[in-house]
Length: 343
Image (cartoon, rainbow, N blue to C red; front, side, top):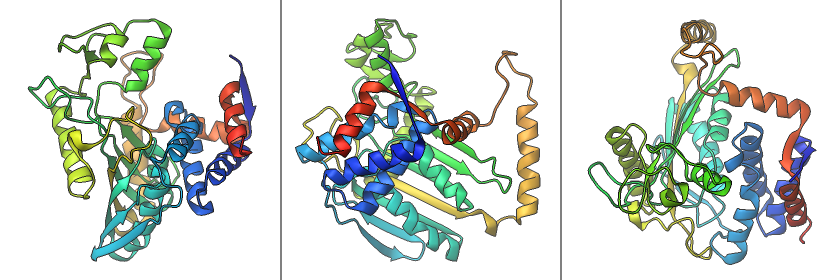
């Protein structure tokens, strides 16, 4: 299977056209395209352009409403409630982020809670957008059950991704985007497709035993990152993003492999802090530079892998893709073009 290179802007336009061809309004289609293609450009290919066919299939099946009227309420100063109306996940979360911005600029901070949402892709693109506005950001989402709570042996918790973004007046932002499982399901699927083995601490099989067989792992449970600490943090994210948003939580979240005509009612939370209220730009730049120097001068465990801050590699890939274009598997690009042209 070969690859094809395409300009980043052209690819975003195709993604937007694919969503518009399936009934999504232009602003929401543009937001979703921006998020997914930025993820692709950052090297997060499992949550990038490959999600375009998946999302459009869910639209056709009825699990995502392309005409969703996203509603935003303000129950208290600094607090927003977002009803995504079963629409396109990235569009819902981007609208929540955008609505929270002026509130954070006025009050210093804002929190938005989303319900009746869908899969939102990688968190890094949202974090980057917030840092470009000069905001410190926390973004989290719940997910379908694939891990056990501490001490358990049945799926009750999602891997519930959590992200933090920190601005830098010099432009070298810090982006931490991580699921709370040891690895993602996509890594297991990739290993199964390649016929390889996995480290035995990644997952357990259906009987709760550590396994090196990715197929057995897919039928079992993902391991939480950091053992009981990761499980506890995943539980807390579901309380915050799922329960308190009014969305589905724990086993009430439909599995991503369930019928595509079924809305998933995922929940997300966004916290924005206006960093300019905390430090003047020159002081912030000086302190961020000092912070970075201390981290980067850490002696590496492997001399071939220097110590970096979270997000450095993703940002380098993004800048390279902006200059050189994006390489996609040829069949995927053909599929996106077909979707964009209504075929």
